Image 1 (cartoon, rainbow, N blue to C red):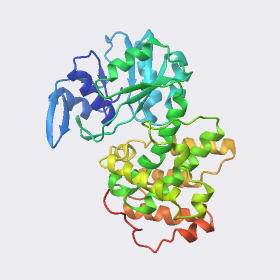
Image 2: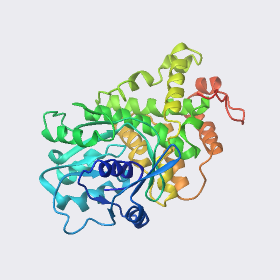
Image 3: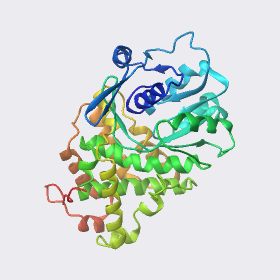
Image 4: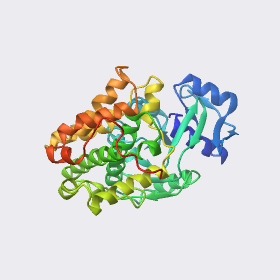
Length: 364
C-alpha cells in the first residue's frame, strides 16, 4: 500500500526477485507510469526498468495476503489499513514502514497480534511518478509491539525484506521506533523547512544545533514515557546525542563538538536524502509533521515536558503546507532566530546570530 520513495523501491526489489505481490497506489499518475514502464530505478545516473504492475485500488479478486506492507505517508495509514483489512489472511500481519509511531494506530484497527513494525534504515526518493532513486544504503529493524521475537512471521518477513538490505529483529520495537522518531523529527522536518538535501543543510552549525535541540526534546519525552531507547543502525545512541546541561553551558566542550561531528557524519552518509514531508507537500498531500514532531509535543504535554522547538517546527511546516511561506534556507534561519527565545538567555548569548548564514562547516 503506497508507491512513493520507500514503497516503490521496495516494490522494485520484490519484482526483480520474482516475489508475488500486488502494488497499490491511489495516485493514478504513479500507477499509470508503473503499468507503462514498470518500476524505474535510477542508479549512477542511469535508469533501469523492472517489469511490474500497480493498481489504483485493491483488485476485488485479490484474495488474501500473508503480509500487507503499509508504505504510505503516516496521514494515510488509517485509510490504507481499513482498505486492506478485508484482504489480510487470518494468520497474516500488516507491516508499518512509516516513520512515527504508526503501529499503535494500526493495532487499534486490526489488533496487536496482526501488527508488525519495520523501521527503515535507508533512504529513497521518487524523482517522478514511477521513477525511484535509492539515496542511501541500509536495511530494516523489525519487531512486534509486545516484544515477542518468537513469532514465525518475523522470520518470513526477514527473508522477504532481505532482498533490499540486512534485517535485524528487535524485542524493543518501541525503543527502536522512538530513536528513529527523534532523528526524523530533526532530519525530515528541518529538511522540509530548509528545502534542500540533508548533506547541504547539516554543513551549517546552526542547523546542527537545531537538530540537536529537536532530538533532545524527543529523548526527554521518550524517557518520561518509560521508553528504553535503542541505538539507530547499531551506532547512533540518542541517549548520548541529547544535549546535557553541561553541553548548553559549555559551547566548546569536547562533548558538544563530538555531537556536532556526529551530525556532520550523518549528513555525509545521507547527503542525498530529501525530506519525505517536503515531497508530500509538493504533491499536494498532508505532511506527516503531526506524526513526528506533533507526537513529541502532544506526549510532552501529557508528561509535563517542554517541547518548544518541536512545537515551532510543527507550526512552520503547517504554514508551508498552507502556502503561507516557502521552504528555504532563509526560513530555516528565521526559525533559528525565533527559537532562541525558547532556549534561555545563556544559550542565546553563546549562539549569536548576525543575520547571515552561521558558520558553514567545510564539506564533509
